[in-house]
Picture 1 (tube, helix red, strand yellow):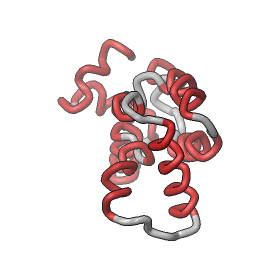
Picture 2 (tube, one colour):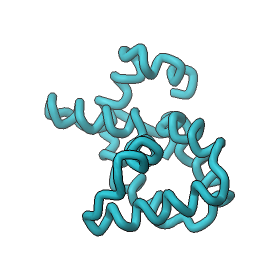
Picture 3 (tube, one colour):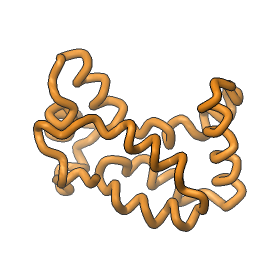
Picture 4 (cartoon, one colour):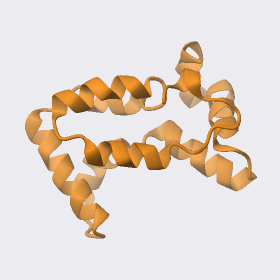
Length: 124
């Protein structure tokens, strides 16, 4: 889902994001499919653009272990947490939960009002 497809009643996209990052098996495929998330995971795009195939393989190993409940260390947390939890998706989930509003509403309000996401206004 792209940011321009988000409406006030859009459901939380976190589960779909999690499914996506666990399903993709190649760096090239991952980068290409990130376009389907335009506006929602731009912070991830900036990180993944710098990755090598080795980085992607290490990421895949880490998320497989994390899914089993095994913490892979602080260094990996610093390297991969932003990809596992894109800023806008994460913050919208937190706001939606805190204020008991639909995720889509929280997401759109963050884009409108939060300086961190100001550059995404053109993608709405």
